[in-house]
Image (cartoon, rainbow, N blue to C red; front, side, top):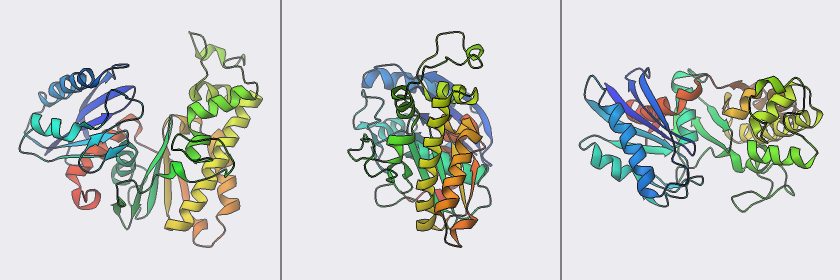
Length: 320
C-alpha cells in the first residue's frame, strides 16, 4: 500500500510516497511561490504531486494532506494565513479531481505532525499525548486514548491560544497574551530587538553565517547558545510561556507525554530547561507530575508521515 502525502507550508510544498508501515519511500520539495495568486500556487503544487505520484511503483490508495490553517474541516477549503493567494481554496476537491476514486483527506499541519509522532515517533506506544510545533506559529494536536481528538471544527489541541500572559502582547487571533503571541519565533525575535538584541553580534555566533544575520528565531537561538544575554532572556521567556501552557493542558487532559518539534524547539536546553522548571512549578497535582516533555523525533518528514496516517491508520486518526 502506498499513500501520496502532501505538506502545505508558507515556505515550501512537500510531497512524498509513504508505505504501509509509515516508511518514507521518497519525497520532494519545492519553494512556495512567494506572493503567488491562487492559480500560481496550484500549478506549483500540481506539478510537484504529479511528479511524485508518477514515481509510485504500485497504485495509490489515498492522498493525505497537512496544511496550514485556517481551513474548513474536513471539507478542505484552505486559507493559510501566510499564503494570501489561497482564500477558501478548494484544495481537497482539486486533488480529488486529479486522483479520482481514492480518498483525499486533510487536517491542520500541526495535527499531522502530532499524529506522526504518535504513530512512528517519540510518542509511539503512548496513549495520551499532545504533539506541539513551535516555529513561525505555535500549534498542536491531541491524542487521547490512542486516538486523535478533533473537536467540533478540527481544532482540538490548538495550544497556541492558551493564555499565558493575560495582559500580554496582542495575538493574531484577536486576543491578548496567547502562547503564540509570546513564543513563536518571529514574535520572540521582535521582543528581543525591543530589549536591545543585535542579531549576530556575538563573536561566537558570527561564523555560523555567510550572509548578514537576520532578526529570526533561528538567529536568536544561535546568539543565545553563544551567550548573548538578551537572546538568553528571550529563550527563557519562551520556555516559561510554553511551560505554563503545558501545565494547563496537562491538568485538563491528563497527559502522559508532550512532544515538541519545530524550528524554535531545536534550541534544546535553552528552551527545555526553563520549560521544565516552569512546568514542574505549576503542574502540582499528583497525576500531572508524571507528564514527560521530549523533543519530536521525525524532523522534516513528520508532516508527510502524519498526513499519510489519515489514510493508513484511519481507525485511530480520521473521523472526518
